Length: 102
Image 1 (cartoon, rainbow, N blue to C red):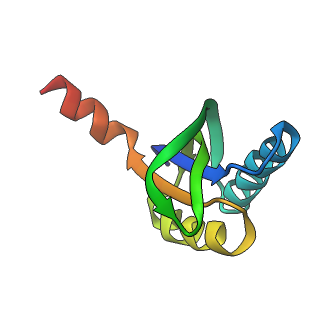
Image 2: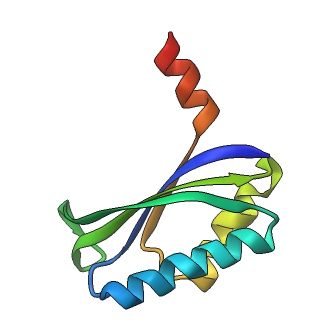
Image 3: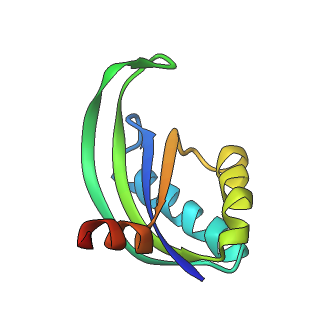
């Protein structure tokens, strides 16, 4: 299992309860693939530099999770189909630590 840091952007129209449900849905999809969430930190609403798909801002959430590296593409596909994640980006956390040490 690899540890990843994921930046997730959710639509700005979600209220607090809707964001909770969206994060729970991401966790559910992750668990279906044998992964687990270690931590989730809400970063708040941020305005985009330019309008994307008629949206001007999004709700940013940073999630640390563990998942087998071979399942990361399947996780990305599940996010597109079954969640309301607007954008996502993953970085392997062990790679970040090595870069910071250098």
